[in-house]
Every structure is written in structure tokens, then in C-alpha cells.
Image (cartoon, rainbow, N blue to C red):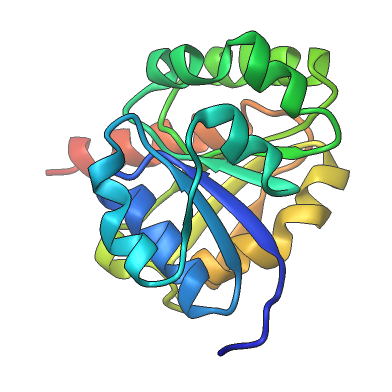
Length: 185
């Protein structure tokens, strides 16, 4: 068994969430996972992940909680419950769902109201490109949250760019990059 580096929960097991959880497992982390469709967790459980029975249990299981779901509406449906809110205090919530700078600001306010630190991020790679030295992960938010989460983020990609405390910076940069890439074609 690999050395355990820490505990991380991953909420959302689409293609990217699964890649994130698998990358953590392969790098010696204890990983708790949760998805609205629990069958998506089965391959990860076979690889050593712990399946949380609900989102609140996933949050409670680890000091760092990574959320990677379809959109912020889905994030809010999952997290904005009394049970999850009561489990968030003292944790870092790392939102890797694509969204707008305003959604990032709103999420940060909500997370702080629950006693959690918050980072908003953007993954500028496909699931198959995770854990590469050149995989870019953009993050913004409280510097203390970044410092706590940095080792985990560096497992996801070797090119982690902390864009400062303005929590909407990562999503703004991601949107600008995507606009340039798709507009240049």
C-alpha cells in the first residue's frame, strides 16, 4: 500500500471528477467519493476509494473537499442543505466546476457563511491529461485556502496558477482563454 498523503473528498464523478479521484488514489491519498448516481463510484471503490452514503458524509470525511459537477446549479443543489452546511466548518471547499466570476463570488460568500475556506478553480485540460507536468489548473481565493490545498492541486497538474485572492479571477481567466481558443479558429 502506498504512503498516505492525506484525505480528500471528491463530489461529482463525471469524466473529470473520476479522473481527479483516480489521480489522488494513485498518488497515495485516502479518497472519499460521492455522486448522485452511486454506480459511478464502483470502479473507484474497487481501486480503494471510500463511497460516502451522501454528500454531507463526503464533506465530513476530509479536510479538503473537491467539487467537480456539471454546473453551479448542480453544486448548489448538492451542497446547499442543512446537513452539508453543518459539515463544512473548518474545511476547504475547492470548486472545480466551470462557471462565471459572479458564481465564484456567490459560492465564496456561502462557503464562508458555513465556516469553510473556499477556492474557485478551472482545469484547462481533458480528463486524460490529468497529473501531467504541463496540465494547467487555475485557482483563486483566500491565500490560506490555496496553501492548504496546493499539494492536492499539484497532484492534478504540474502547472498550478494561483491568481490571487479575488475569487472570480480563475473563472474570468478560464472564460478569456476559452474565448480566445474558440474565437481564433
